[in-house]
Image (cartoon, rainbow, N blue to C red):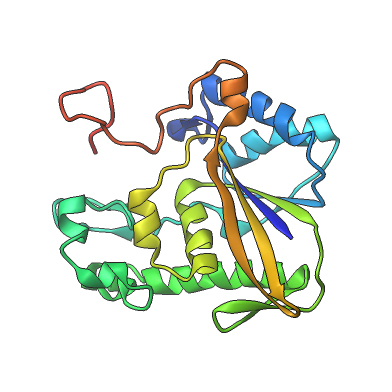
Length: 243
């Protein structure tokens, strides 16, 4: 089985859609995906993800199933440096979250008092539970830390979603703390992450990432990936996002 996790195009957060650049990226993505045999397509209910998927759906003459749990992973917290403002739960300053060893632990990352107050664990378990149920529909049933194969296949499914949510899904497949992925990876707009199942012994499988945040469709068209999701590469560059 193969899973394509696709981040939306360059976002216009204010209007819940894409920028002009984002719509262009979505068309380039569609040119790539239309060459792939995809069994089923799923999409977040948020406008920026749906608008990204439209170009592909129209080009392939397909429809997608909208899944509420594919929306951005966004419990709100009051992080240590901004106690008077609400921030998305995984947007911490490195100087703060790296001080706590538990954030690196897959079984303890959500035990921080700030995370507990925002019920981040409950939302994580809800989302990953929905993800596991989807995989079970394709014959891969969660069994401890791996998946029991009830119906081996080479189907490909595509999920149009968001960076934070993508890291949640990957953390489930990899059995690691999502904090590591949220803070040490970055998937550019319209990037494609490809995950394959591996059934090395009959009846049991794990999932392995063969490419993360791939933007080959942009490079092929001579376009650079959008900056969204990144922070300033050097602090003195005021044109890039600092917080």
